Length: 324
Image (tube, rainbow, N blue to C red; front, side):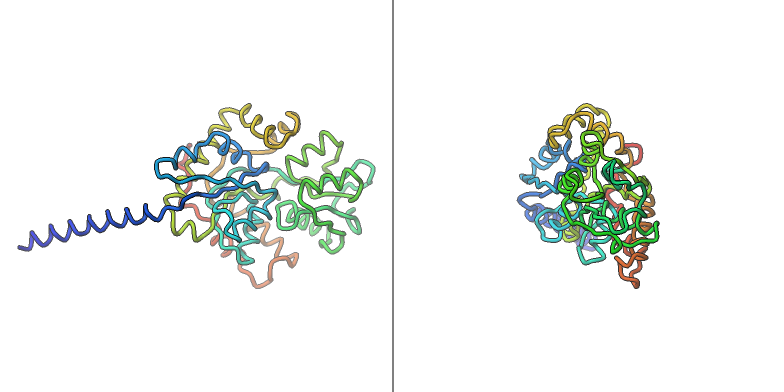
């Protein structure tokens, strides 16, 4: 009798798990919404090759793509529930989470040097200290904005010492080249275009102060659909490895999306490392350093535990297997 009860109990457990799995499958969303961005080259390959659409087809889930023009836009879309996954800089993601945007970082699509401080040859600006009283174009809430704050801080200045002109990245390039501003906190590929096509000067560079390009997911989506997060990361890995193995295809995807010349895109790719996708200590260290600098600059409240905020932001459970 005991054996029979044990068997029935086991069968009931299996049935319960099956029903739970079926219920989870029934709760699949009709679509997954991702962004694509010219500062996230892997997203362009993923969109073009259709790896995610192929992976989700057996489950009947569609994919909807939305362009992000900067980290600020991606994070706004995530906060408003317009997308499920968005591309941003690591420091921008930290700032957003501290300000109440419930996101998690689950993947590193690049380790870029995608921002620098840019000016025209004739301005006489050669270092961050020269920006005192100058008009500087910047996109608030992005890595270039954070880079600018840190550069000014290193010169003993704050962003209040300069005259910030808030523009989206592409408009910042235009404003610089027109002479409407004296400098610009640039972002590739627009920065590379201004450098090559417009003769702009990158007068302050610091690769270490560029935080990682990361993929953010809404925390509620992650909790409800961890299996789909895993599927998205696997598709991203397909795109990343394809991009590394096929550099000409990567360049072509960027040229098609940006309508910029090959020479400009080559400069962007030259400054972009796609080899380290796992989320871990490297991202934590970089983002924490940016967070501490922002706290010292008064952008992040003094009482914020930056290290704890970074730990809460990063979620390494979906990391690709080593060696991939």
